[in-house]
Length: 300
Image (tube, rainbow, N blue to C red; front, side):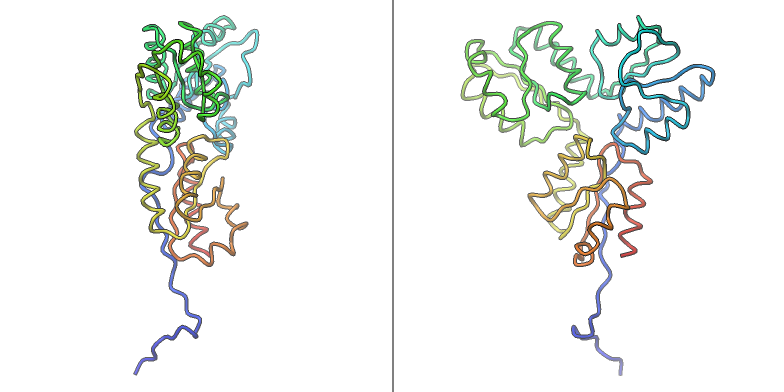
């Protein structure tokens, strides 16, 4: 008769590793990377550059550099060739500066980000006090703010209720408040700010501009986390949507945020103790990074 395996034989079942369906490049990032690569291929004799990092991923930026696509930290006084507006967007003033320097601007602002800019402008024109829910230093929020400020000075940027409280007297006196949201923000952040505004404003117009990709990614990851004893989030620490994803999942189960497969070695002891592991990734995480993470997990 065959021997029955007992616990004391120290036998371990294979790990169950699941990969989220909504992991890796979103539409806006995929479009930006493919378009800028195509621009260089079609214009080999022209300079092609991007104002700021095209996406928050060092490996991708290095690959673009190897193709001859430069990343500019600021607009030079003089330039030539093509200058790409990244998916985070820019203000009309910045685009004019790019033209004045001698570049041909190519606008690759994500369509979802463009909608937030347009909504903020619309609210400003209609006389609302504009509240932008997001991190003030994030390039997407900087661009949204700049577009709104072309029409009104009554603009507040806040990622928490505490940050918004310093505008309380202005909001109370203005009475009408229009709200837009950074596309990669957490819905819980938006909800807490709306709850606060409800207590001080007479009229609130809310535009939930969190992009569909972000919502689907977060909702799927939360469901995976409920049935996992470890969640792994792959993506840049500079990526807002990736860090928000990790923050959300930490409230549900053990979660680690890594930028690449090599970082898994730092958590080897933890990983070896876990059986049900799920992997998700930010919107700027390339497919090859995700595949490398899965492969390394399978080797443990």
